[in-house]
Length: 254
Image (cartoon, rainbow, N blue to C red; front, side):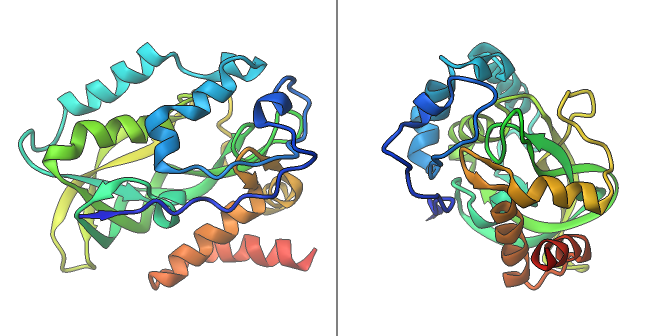
């Protein structure tokens, strides 16, 4: 079984100040970032950091989070089989889930785009960054991770602590094709945009997207690094995303 614990790249600490100290107000600009690891998810460290800050009001309660992942567990496509997870952004280059297989995949009915303001991980309240979400229409190339049946409950709990802290995504079982056009079709867990969430942006023009990626920085680092890592991760798999490449070219030309 493979285990990916690659940490997100982090900036050096400034002046020895802790993340908790820097999260005492909404109008902060993070001068420290953290690498997130699987151990952080297992220990629920992000919630611990944020619970005593004004940002806590934006988080789902632990009870709501558990109810959500248990609902997903109760609706498995195959109650006795393995589960497929679709990665389209940071899951590609920093999955942090335990899986038995990792293959290219195509998801149908949704496309990738910068549809979510990030005020914690890749930005702040005063200077929000943007992160990717799946929105309706089209298709999306990404990576499918096969999670063994014996590990599903544990892995769903980890995924919800990572992806569902603010309720900006909706977990859905969606049709996906593995390993190219002739591969098998399966239903996979994917996190799609919650269009009712206050941080949902809708479709933004390129210039607006680039303006939010250029200088925003949150707990996990600069927003522009998020784009770069995702673009690099896709290219390593042989995928080309003209939208992301176009945004990166505009950032580089500044």
